[in-house]
Length: 326
Image: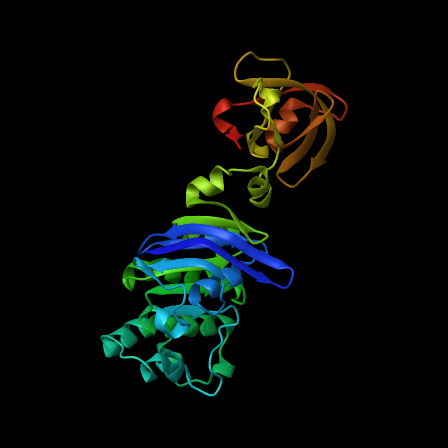
């Protein structure tokens, strides 16, 4: 549905690009990255608000030089950008001033029921909560029947108590209104729950894009792995591989300690360097071959059975199925 090819944009000292990727129709794509990584700039480039180099194709048509209003995309900014001098209802119906809305009455009734804003239609914007403003901004965007809906950190200003219900609503929008969504965020939980496809964006570059589960569970580089919070990233040489520049990661919760060396899977002699007791588990830091420091989380009951102390010699055990290669 949307194809981006060699998109490039320079703003002051920040460079976006060259970025290329595709988004399928009726899918939910999340662009995941740190604050300042260029996510909003990318959305604005897709919307036509920015003027990047490169090509954008929508439904097979080159829209690179088409003005924002003719692209027919919906855009919900982080601060919602609602009209303060209009009621909730007038905000939602604003797009009817400049375009014909298909099945306008039924769409409006369905939106206010779906987003649970029926009781605030006459209220002024200044009297709305963050969650209510978010719902109104989404309703206004969908009411315009956009071909593509762009969401810029849509949950950042929403009270955590309402976040789950709004995420559920966002998840349902794609099929309910036959809409494709691109959503930018720095929140891993949002990305994991909402996305069909995830693009990891850092410093103006898309470093990895693909099926959400694949990206979150199988990072393609150390940079992506560290951003996603992967721990225990080491060279595969520890595992006996000869390839250079190959790495693996192991979840701290998947590491076991043994009193004696075993021959199965991966088992290494180690020295217990530090032990930290937490409420229901222990954090253990252990070195292998005097250089590689492993971090493990061991449930309290199992730790008590192990009787480990700082300075002890032990064995780290890793099951092959738990190794993530990078």
